[in-house]
Length: 499
Ligand code: NAD
Image (cartoon, rainbow, N blue to C red; front, top):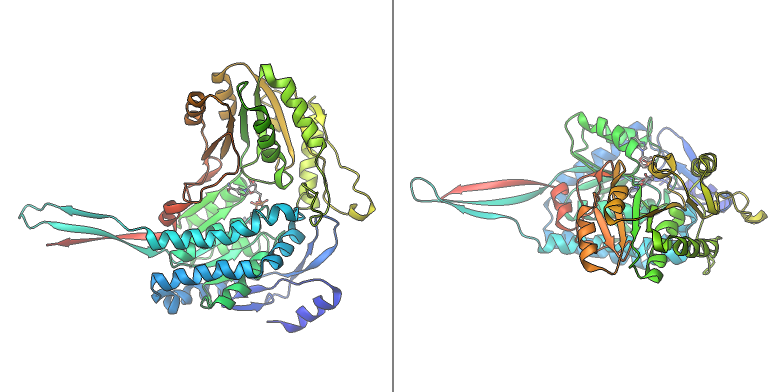
């Protein structure tokens, strides 16, 4: 560990984030650092030590050698116990994780303490449970000589898994990949988002404290192109790549993965619809849509950006959604009354604001919001935007077609079930949908027609981690969750034995 770097950060009241390679915290060999700033007020949180290409290669080599060390030969029961130990280890340091996640993202502690950190820990438990309990296939077969044969499938770890993560739910989305990867006996090299380096780094400390062998979990910091993300995904010793992030980044990673035909698992962008039928329970539909549009300042891949409301209740729905949006309290993460934080960065705010401007230019009716709120001098350096609702744009509008990833939605009336289904599916994305109706037949009929990875009926963000999760169309490749994760994180060998 570079003690000097940490001491100088401590003296400034900031926390530097180091790479975690082969069980040790290290600065980047290229000597480069970048700033980690608070999205709430722009203050410096600390410096992040960027991994060079040589550092990434060392991390991959450490992971490779872990596979041939004690980790590779470990019995499943022992591995599972270590994963349960990780759950306890995160929970013991719950407040450290909470503070680090909220400092990096600016999200309300009330949200992160219920979602990000507990679910981040739970990902190790669910996949430890699964690997312990799921068997493999077995077939008997007849042979011409009458003696027969048996077949059984063995699961082997895939090897070194590159885990490339986004910034919106940093710990939760990272352990959603690292949990099953380790449960299956792989070693990982994680590249957290440059915006949120902290909780992945803290997890390194927990890995050491619970006795996960060195090299099983590595963290390399940096950016995408020309930095750690690219170095990692094109490294020939990486056996598989799991990625969560933008569709365009997925395209770049897929090109890198083509060299050596490495498998990929992608969870990508969305432009998710909600359909609200006139027979919906209005209170539930408003409460759910408020969350699906505005939770995490709209920075949830599964969030709703297009709302289709049956015409008889359109006016009332828009009025109530507006009231809800205008009642949101923006502010610092530690304020228990705050339910919306800032966007992740000034750069992302520029992107979201460009859509707010575009909506106005395209002639949208701005029901509420549309600008930058006055947060006072204290928070003036933060990436704040107002919760925003639009109506009146055509379906072809970029606002209705492109992922904005901010606290905003366009609401559009519809007249028939067929029309609602057509509008909901009229997108290049296919991640999630929410359907609000009290008519059970209609609920199942409509859900079956949604071209998405997950369709909620009368709820949103309710996740049973045993179920398949992923996106169709431009929203992803493959499914993870439950036994589906085993498909990606293991190689199967069929053993055929002639009796
Ligand atoms: P991003 O694609 O910009 O970055 C994600 C990660 O990829 C970062 O760690 C980044 O450094 C890295 N990266 C960027 N370019 C790279 C390259 N060429 N090679 C290798 N790595 C590279 O995404 P983001 O802005 O961090 O996250 C927001 C996006 O993630 C949204 O589109 C959102 O919908 C999506 N997302 C999807 C899911 C899902 O489950 N489908 C979940 C969360 C977020």
